Image (cartoon, rainbow, N blue to C red):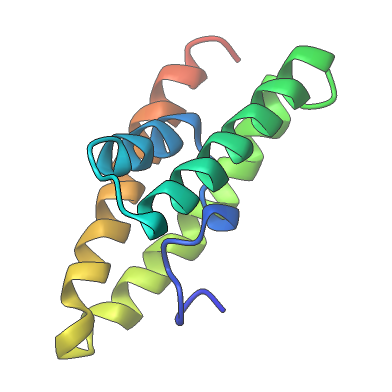
Length: 110
């Protein structure tokens, strides 16, 4: 599933990554972009609700992001080997960088 749709909202577990992806679709008004924006907003709201309710602690959130980060590195390598998927690989690598930055910021509070 990751290889078929490496940008699925279910794969975006970092707040910074969700914000970045929302920024990509913010100015687009076609139906697919609108549907993606709604899915991304829902994912962000669910993440925020988990944090607000205490269900997701900062340490658990960091572990979740680290797990996704490791999977995204592998996914980017796989996508990078396929010539017509290089733009997908670059976007996943951008996600990796954002998640790494977020984890570095979060580490100050753990």
